[in-house]
Image (cartoon, each protein chain N blue to C red):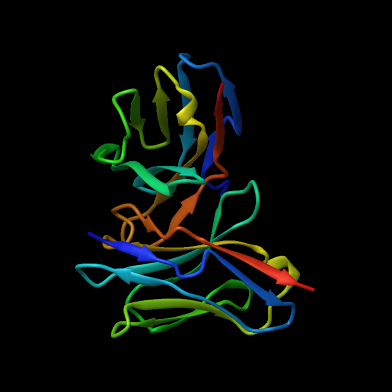
Length: 113
Length: 114
């Protein structure tokens, strides 16, 4: 299995621009999670989906952030408009309920200038 | 609400020595506990997990952790440190065993002295 695939690996954008991060979970996994990692706040859960349905988005910092999972093999995290404080590494992870395993992607390093 | 505390943001050990990284958790239900390692500019790799079976859990590359309910702890150990063990280590807790998200500790940066 190719694991959890995230794209792009690096993204540099200007403040005010829209940013879209993409994730392909492991085939057969029915839960998908978006995390953000910063030096100040560590690893934070932003939102997660079960069977493509958003379950808890209480970690999404502001309305500028939105996430979708149109099907079992694809999810996006969008920031519009982006701000310098959004600079972080964003990780996607997937899991299979009952299997107690979370597999992380390699992350997207976002820099907003 | 669940939470994780990792004591010691930085730990330094000599190559070949045993090391222990501390993790204490808080959970309202029997927890699932995890240790992950992160190398610079990389994602998180699972080292081991506790899922209510044996309290002594063995993971990859010689890592072990023991679940102690009375102490609400899940400390990570390795009998002999290698230079390649230098990394950031994260303890995490889940109450849903894969259906909900992980709550992570702040991490412990492990330094290996030659």
